[in-house]
Length: 142
Image (cartoon, rainbow, N blue to C red; front, side, top):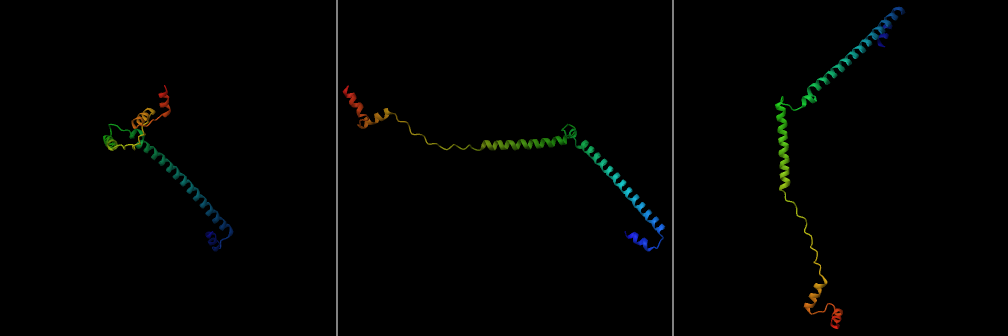
């Protein structure tokens, strides 16, 4: 310590020097105790103020005070304005969806008509061809 070096320069006897050292140490001890007590008191004050602030915020911004009521027509009008804005936006979106034409599905190829054996026979007889020669001979044999 710098103060002890200065104390040595004063050329005091050992008993006086010891008394001064004891007084300085007692003063430092008292000072640290006072500082600790002050810090503790300030921490308690901060904690009390924090709890009071939380309580006041609950009173001011609590669920009960956030409810829409007839007591606050300004708040109710803000809610109505935002609700009307939302409704018009939804209606415009619905109108836009309804006004856009739905795309037609791609045209599919129609399958070829099924030709029956009877139709083949009729076509062959019109052309003069015999579609079933075995059947014709059998028919002539009867």
